[in-house]
Length: 299
Image (cartoon, rainbow, N blue to C red):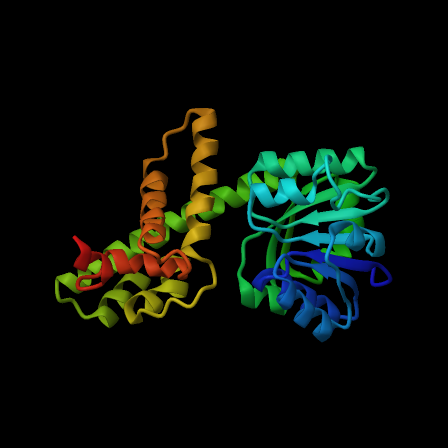
């Protein structure tokens, strides 16, 4: 597997750190591409690879290509059948699509790739920036099982937990559900801590009690102190939380399932975007619930 030339489309926080991890392990990065050309050029110099300006250039020099783009629109663009894209000269290539996009977008990309003679896996990530750099991602992979087995050594070098979850679209569906529940938990924790602060309760005591009772959660561990201390450096943005809750809510509508808590969480993250806080980490939802913070001053 380390004899392959690997490409990355999308080298933001996640994609760049995945590429760094693979270089650390002796993989060869053939080329990278990102709309932010200066960031791509800087990373290419660090990794000693090409920073190409067009998608067909990347396909021409790489045979396993990771895509880590932002949304459905970006997925449609890089897998366009109507203009030069990653599909140009793609016969024999393997695409590993890691974007948190809708199941339909992943399925459409895989279908377009197949028509171009390429193979595709959807590798949804339930982790953040440190895990990308350390190679400890939680990867949920959808797609052909034989292709998954062929790519397993590469994927294992990026992950601590690796699961094949069925067809292409299943990876995106499960990721949407993971983020739906995470976003609900985050918004709920912000309300509990914010109400506790308004009641004059010592935050250290409240957080400790939460951790030892039914109020405990993974989000309490990752976001509790950040909410209390207003430290909202971005690991998973409010903008992404709003997008991902929206994907889950669209899936619920499609099958006729009511998800009022998920709709309420999406509303909170959309409110952050409206207030110009969308670039904050999702822990910034506490700015809407703690007394004397921004939202409280606006109502």
